[in-house]
Image (tube, rainbow, N blue to C red; front, side, top):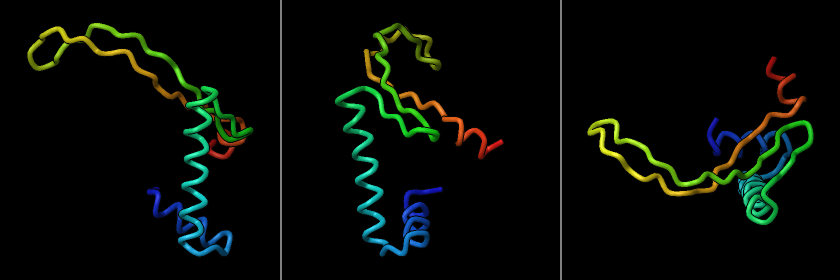
Length: 90
């Protein structure tokens, strides 16, 4: 499902215009990003939990040449499905 498909679904389910649905979806996504930046964790009870993880710099290899490369430190995001989401899919 693409973002546009999700916007269309929100508009149909709520009776919102597509423009309003787009703004609502963007607000939710921006809220998740802001929560991760400020607190490192966002929990949507029953649906999922987003959490940041610090990944240290490490040595890797270029698969074509075998040359050693340094992979810089970064912040990654993990997503853990909640019980309601797991139940809906199984």
